[in-house]
Structures are given as structure tokens and as C-alpha cells.
Amino acid sequence: MPETEPHDVLIVTGMSGAGRSTVANALEDLGWYVVDNLPPQMLRPLVDLAVHPGNALPRIAAVVDVRGGRLFSDLAAIITELRAKSSVRVLFLEATDLVLVRRFEQVRRPHPLQDDGTLLDGIARERERMLSVRELADIVIDTSELNIHQLATTVTDMMAPPGRAGVRVTVESFGFKYGTPTDADIVADARFLPNPFWQVELRDSTGRDAPVREFVLAQDGAHDFLDGFEAMLKPVLAGYARENKRHATIAIGCTGGKHRSVALVEELAARLARSPELAVTVKHRDLGRE
Image 1: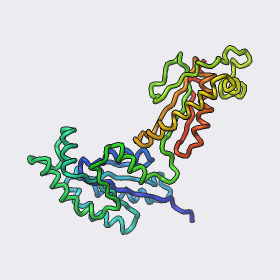
Image 2: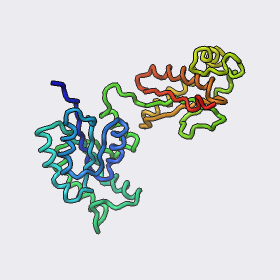
Image 3: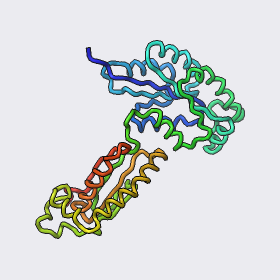
Image 4: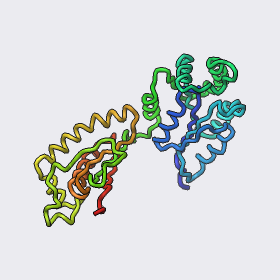
């Protein structure tokens, strides 16, 4: 009998203003299927979906909180029930009253349980309702001293599968005559190198072909550029990972996006792919456009 896929169900809950949205976004970036503001009673069919043989959603996270109103009171009992037959974990987010008040004041929104009282009244009511759920938590994160980037990084470190790359990098070639990529984080210019277009035997080939690649990389300054650019990118991409910027686009342009930029992108991508912290994808935006 074939083995079923491993599954993981995570319930994300905790105090309003403690960072549930940040955690949900971080989990989505890790490939989790995230359901926000789920009524506790819907956890049962969600867990059934997760454990169903052959399902395509082995990692499911459900954000459950007091926005569910009266339905939320059943959460602790439902968690206990589900744990009796499946693997369910609870991640609970909390913060001090002072921090929560400051966060609500910054966004100028009332607490969901504030009613006609003060922010502190709403926070106190929520803490009381949350007590039984917090006691069931597998993971408790106090976000009082964390900004959104630090919280996302904390969750990523906890929940990322072993060996997952820290940053997904797209290395893209383009032609300046067609415009700079609007989504590029870093742009470099390859027009300082001689253009293979003026070599009759290379004109119809591209930077993916060996003769053009060898021509471009043999030019004075080509390897110096690649060495320096790669050295510059290492601390930048490491910083992106620390700040939870999980996607980066690095663009190299030449005149038409056919020869020089393509050859350099292929070489740079091969170098970056040696790092286990990076998942590298190559894109040639304007190749074939001429």
C-alpha cells in the first residue's frame, strides 16, 4: 500500500495586533496554504483535507482569532478533539498591553472586543478568552520586541523545510532599448563590453550559444565585472534574508538583450546557484524580440 504524503496543520492564533498577518504572509512565502479568519468549526474539514491520501496541500495553516465572535469560544475544545486523531500544532502570538495599545493607535483602528470601552478593556477581554487556547499552544512567540521583518524571519527559521533556500533570485537579461525592467531590485549595464552584433559570424547567435558566450567572457573587464558584481551581491542577498525579503530580481542589460547581457546572466546565475541559501532562476526578457 503506498504511503500517504506527510502533512502538517498549523493553527495560528493569539492576541489581536501581535502579528498574525505577518506570520500568515511568511507561511505563504514558504509554500503553506493559508486560510485567514477561519471559524473554528471549519477546522475539522480542513484537517480532513490535509490528511486525505494524495492531497496536494500537505502544509496548511489556519488563522483563527476573536474575529470569529461567539464561534471562537469552541476553539480550545476543537483543538483537543483534532489532536486525538491527527497532528495539529498551535502557534500563539502575544505581546504586552503597552505594545498592543501602541500598535492599535498607530493604525487608528479599534480593538475587535473594545465595544464602548477603551483599548485596554478590549485587550483584557481578549486575554481572558485566549487563556485556554494559549495553554494548548505548542509554540508561543512574544512579538513585543520584534518588528515585522524580525517576526517573519523568526517564523521562517521555525517553519521552513530543511534545505530550503533563504532567497529566491531571478537573474534577468534585458535590452535597454526596450526599457528597464520595472520589477528589478538591482540593475547592471553590460554595454561597456564590445557588442558581438558587429561580428558578422556572431550576429545571428545569442548569448546562450557557446561562440557568443566565449567572445563576451574573453573581453577585458568581463570577469572583473562578474567577480565584483558577485562579491557585491553576497552581502546584499544575505541582508535580504535577514530582513525577510525572500525574492530578488537582478537584471543585466545590453542594447538589445540578445548577446552580452544574456551571456553574463548565464554566467552569474551559475555562480550564484552554488550557494545553498539561494534558489536561482534565469530569465531572458527580450531574447527573440529582434
